[in-house]
Length: 88
Image (cartoon, rainbow, N blue to C red; front, side, top):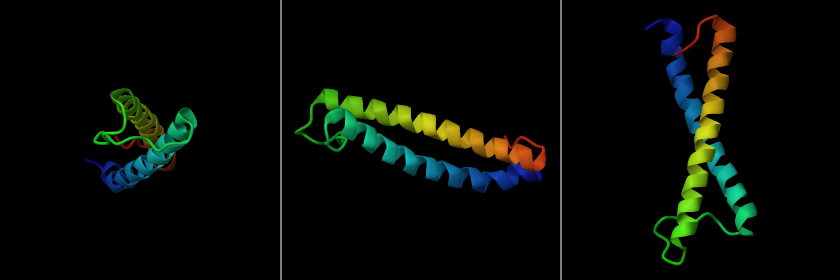
Protein backbone atom coordinates (compact mmCIF):
# COMPACT_ATOMS: atom_id res chain seq x y z
CA UNK A 1 0.00 0.00 0.00
CA UNK A 2 1.48 3.33 -0.95
CA UNK A 3 1.79 6.34 1.33
CA UNK A 4 -1.16 8.29 -0.13
CA UNK A 5 -3.56 5.40 0.37
CA UNK A 6 -2.29 4.81 3.89
CA UNK A 7 -2.50 8.50 4.79
CA UNK A 8 -6.04 8.71 3.40
CA UNK A 9 -7.40 5.97 5.70
CA UNK A 10 -7.82 8.17 8.82
CA UNK A 11 -9.13 11.01 6.66
CA UNK A 12 -11.66 8.65 5.12
CA UNK A 13 -12.79 7.49 8.56
CA UNK A 14 -13.24 11.07 9.75
CA UNK A 15 -15.16 11.94 6.59
CA UNK A 16 -17.42 8.92 7.10
CA UNK A 17 -18.19 9.98 10.67
CA UNK A 18 -19.01 13.50 9.48
CA UNK A 19 -21.18 12.06 6.71
CA UNK A 20 -23.12 10.00 9.24
CA UNK A 21 -23.77 13.04 11.41
CA UNK A 22 -24.83 15.14 8.43
CA UNK A 23 -27.08 12.37 7.12
CA UNK A 24 -28.80 12.08 10.49
CA UNK A 25 -29.54 15.80 10.55
CA UNK A 26 -30.84 15.77 6.97
CA UNK A 27 -33.02 12.73 7.69
CA UNK A 28 -34.59 14.38 10.74
CA UNK A 29 -35.32 17.57 8.80
CA UNK A 30 -36.83 15.69 5.83
CA UNK A 31 -38.96 13.54 8.13
CA UNK A 32 -40.29 16.60 9.98
CA UNK A 33 -41.29 18.21 6.68
CA UNK A 34 -42.90 15.01 5.37
CA UNK A 35 -44.72 14.12 8.59
CA UNK A 36 -45.81 17.55 9.70
CA UNK A 37 -43.40 18.00 12.57
CA UNK A 38 -42.79 14.71 14.36
CA UNK A 39 -39.43 13.06 14.97
CA UNK A 40 -38.53 9.98 12.91
CA UNK A 41 -39.73 6.87 14.77
CA UNK A 42 -37.47 4.28 16.32
CA UNK A 43 -38.19 0.68 15.38
CA UNK A 44 -39.15 -0.15 18.99
CA UNK A 45 -41.73 2.60 19.46
CA UNK A 46 -45.01 0.77 20.01
CA UNK A 47 -47.15 3.83 19.27
CA UNK A 48 -45.82 4.14 15.69
CA UNK A 49 -47.07 2.07 12.76
CA UNK A 50 -45.05 -0.38 10.70
CA UNK A 51 -45.50 1.94 7.74
CA UNK A 52 -43.98 4.89 9.61
CA UNK A 53 -41.07 2.88 10.97
CA UNK A 54 -40.20 1.31 7.61
CA UNK A 55 -40.60 4.58 5.72
CA UNK A 56 -38.28 6.32 8.18
CA UNK A 57 -35.73 3.52 7.86
CA UNK A 58 -35.85 3.67 4.06
CA UNK A 59 -35.43 7.45 4.12
CA UNK A 60 -32.52 7.17 6.54
CA UNK A 61 -30.78 4.54 4.38
CA UNK A 62 -31.23 6.53 1.18
CA UNK A 63 -30.02 9.78 2.71
CA UNK A 64 -27.05 8.10 4.39
CA UNK A 65 -26.00 6.35 1.19
CA UNK A 66 -26.24 9.54 -0.83
CA UNK A 67 -24.38 11.71 1.68
CA UNK A 68 -21.66 9.11 2.29
CA UNK A 69 -21.04 8.63 -1.43
CA UNK A 70 -20.87 12.38 -2.00
CA UNK A 71 -18.47 12.93 0.92
CA UNK A 72 -16.26 9.96 0.00
CA UNK A 73 -16.08 11.02 -3.63
CA UNK A 74 -15.28 14.63 -2.69
CA UNK A 75 -12.49 13.47 -0.36
CA UNK A 76 -10.99 11.14 -2.96
CA UNK A 77 -11.15 13.86 -5.62
CA UNK A 78 -9.39 16.32 -3.29
CA UNK A 79 -6.62 13.80 -2.60
CA UNK A 80 -6.23 13.18 -6.34
CA UNK A 81 -5.89 16.93 -6.97
CA UNK A 82 -3.38 17.37 -4.15
CA UNK A 83 -1.22 14.32 -4.76
CA UNK A 84 -1.96 13.12 -8.28
CA UNK A 85 -2.91 9.70 -6.91
CA UNK A 86 -6.40 8.28 -6.39
CA UNK A 87 -6.55 7.11 -2.75
CA UNK A 88 -8.42 3.82 -3.19
